[in-house]
Amino acid sequence: MKTNKTTTNRLKQALLHVLFWLAILFFFTLTFSADNTINSNIFYFSLFLMPITIGTTYISVYKLIPDYLVTKRYFLFGLYSLYTIIISVFSIMFSVFYGIAFLTDFMFTKVESLTRNTLFIIACIYLVVIVVSSFKLLKLNLKQSKYNAELEAKILEAQLKLKEQELKYLKMQIHPHFLFNTLNTMYGFALKKSDTTPEMILKLSNLLDYLLYQVDKPSVALTEEINHIQDYIDLEQMRFNDTLDVSFTSNNCTDTVSVAPMLFLPFVENSFKHGKILEGKLNIDIAFKCSGRNIDFSVSNSHEKSQSTPNGIGLENIKKRLELLYKGQYKLDISESNDSYQVQLNLELPHG
Image (cartoon, rainbow, N blue to C red):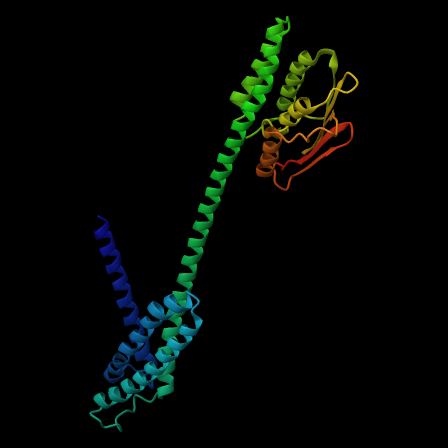
């Protein structure tokens, strides 16, 4: 089936070539006529010039342009083009001389109808060569542009797939890290047989639902992320009891704003994990301030500078996720003082 289609395409192409050269033959016959009257001598004279016209044209469009000009081998293109011009000019002069001689039986006085000079004939032939070569070059440029566009689309598709795979990998790392800390807290309560254990299980259930079913979504409502941060804080409040002092505020944050899931929670988790109880209290301040599509998020915790800087898996992964998801749309500042550790994240979400 494929062979038949290829054969049909070749036959169509050959037919188009034949029709084109017949049109050029008619053009030569009309152009070389002294009084615009077509006669047999003019027709046969034009026919004499067709082989050199066809040969020069095909050398240009099938050899010089694709093999040397398009591949930017300019020196060889210029050199072989010069050879082609020299050979073709001599061939044209040869064809003109013997064409006239053949048509007049070497009686050169009988050439009234062939009054066009040789330079004009050469110009006509090279006009055909140049026009056809220009169309060939345009066709090759369009083909190359199409190829480049397809290649760019494939590269973009591959980059998107790679980005999705990297995001999934980062989420897989976040889940165990978060669950390990939370389950460790619950284990401590279970050992104590605390009455708050059922409430902790309910809170954890909500968080697990968020992790298992919501985190794979491209985005969730900001209010939903905030609610689960509150659940996490409640769990930690049960663990720390009176040794924890948390301030959590959110201003003007509505459910019309969407963000990537688990975007802010790892920062909160880090503040509990790496925070230091000073003077009997672990102090943590968490705040969201929303203005249109702009989100200002901050979290700070009591901290001793002598401690190692908290650069756990969760924090490193969230930095990578921010770069993948919001490149050029966020500003992240992390600083520490003698007694506190601060994170400031500003996120400018795109409209729509």
